[in-house]
Amino acid sequence: MTAFSACLSTLCLSHTDAAELLDVSVGTIKQAASGHRPAKQWMFERLSDLFEMVEQAADDIIGDQDDLDDGAAFAPLTVNVDDILLPHPSLKRAALARAMLVLGPMLIVPVE
Image (cartoon, rainbow, N blue to C red; front, side, top):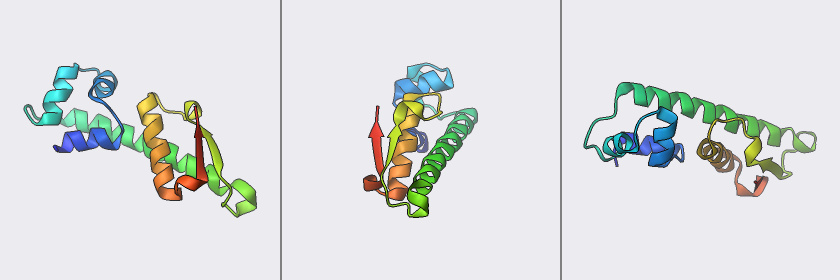
């Protein structure tokens, strides 16, 4: 797995999703992910920006869960995936996944 491919996986992005978000062809993404052509530095920078957005959205979800039940924070939080403020459904799922990894799947109840 190339570093670029790992970045795509971390953000839950398919080749098609990445092509859409980076405004390049699917073929360009596939070549960069497979290592046949190196990914451009700007591609990593854009993925880094998207990762920061995902991290912030996940932190917001975690904060919402922490605010439940007067600070006890053991009540499950219902999260509507569509309400996560990110520009792509895959990024929304990545933020939800990160929040679940931090809090555990019992404290997050996703709805769509």
